[in-house]
Length: 593
Image (cartoon, rainbow, N blue to C red):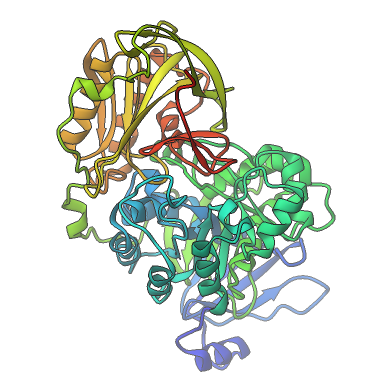
């Protein structure tokens, strides 16, 4: 795929000097991601594309580039615009337009977004909203067609189901460039009808296919790669990243608000002779972290601190990412390439001085210069939380015996720093026919379908989640986004549920049987039209409360709950249909008595 200029004839003439360029960036220390060199030169831009570069290398005579306008960067570094190879914009809690306002000044000019969060709530309407609401902004938001809605068919109920027909419809949208992360890796390996047909629809078009392969190795990894996916953002260890790159897979090293994997991955692969298949991404990064630390410039900075050569780190967030998605004239500084450029004070700290998108200066000194019009969309006003009447009884875990002790299967986290779990068997007390908890580390977890099509819900037990009192609930619950609540006291669990229903979705916390704080996310129960600053303030207050009830080890306690119902991260997860063994792809009985 190539981004085509509107005036190719004019671009050719500007390159040869027959007509002036629109803009010349003068006295730049140009970072060449093709060769790894840095040299001084001027960059001529015509109609949003690079026409010619005049350099002072190899004793060549420097030729002046004639232009209508000049921008002297006075020896500062110029790199290609930064590309986020894998993101869910919904996870920033911002709408696409508000997201753009925040990340452009940090040098992000292109993102590859998989809107499977909102797709699980509103189906194709949600995807079209993310697509249409990101039009006419000074950055490029490529959209992927969500491949797994729900994530694992038959093991959870979402607001929609996608098959071959829905994928075909989405792939016909203008900026949909491929298939979103193929999370049902067991479905791919097992040749399930749904995944075979969806992958075939993408492959017959030659579309990019984004992968999701946590902990896959050996024959399983080979089988998954033969299915068609070419990338993975789920690598957590050096060993995992090395194996995937050795097998020709792109590894999207992730630095999200949940998972910080870049440092470990860089340590594992930095000695490879070729790093063409290493890219960088944020996946799920919240508004407050973007405001405090940055966006892709922060991910690059993290890679450099981990020991990656600065030019290799920049290449991993520019040219490598463009090649990964198959765009052949993006991510580099060369004639015919899109003029997405970032001016840096120095390479190590990745402090952005200015941002040029398609040849136009759009941000400088952290300020967005190109206004993004606020637009309203009907879907932003709809209530997405449809739950019939609940009672306290719904929050009790009914046992198969009346009194005594019973063995149960529970979800166990081994660390607050990881979303991976195991299923273990423990013995619990039964009183008056219900499970009784008298253990600070053990909590109930309930998942309630909120999409209005079915009234399914299930209750289980979770150890090591982190809270020792209170209740936390969220309508952000990857990826079906049903209402998920962790609680010890049924009254507090009930309070949180009622609160989230009343505000139309979000995150809520109750302590001492009263709602302590909530964050309203009125757009699909996932996002808000509020500004990043407003979101950050709410998030900071909620994080302090969550730390006070036990979530002290995890850097971002706000997102602890969101992966508890995600049946594609091993081993044990909870859905509205019950306890799921992800590895065996089966629903497990809670009770063994």
